Picture 1 (cartoon, rainbow, N blue to C red):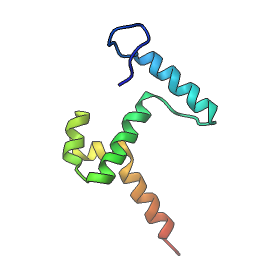
Picture 2 (picture 1 turned 60 degrees about the horizontal axis):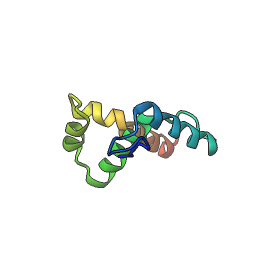
Picture 3 (picture 1 turned 45 degrees about the vertical axis):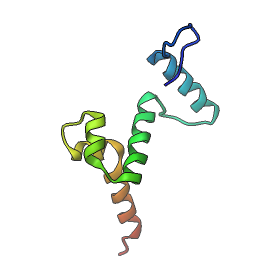
Length: 88
């Protein structure tokens, strides 16, 4: 997705992507940001827009829809919303 400054049409490597993300996260005072953050964020928004867990499962090469939904945090979001609505 991002071309290297080393010439040609070569992409940046994983460690360079990680360093750039960490520097950007540090600049805006965010913790726990890495290259997987982009993958999970893409998956979360793809699912919210399409509700196509089967396509996302295939894109991520996961073995089940349950794993995909857990990976992108959809189940956790649903639990969090339910707990906010729960009253004793």
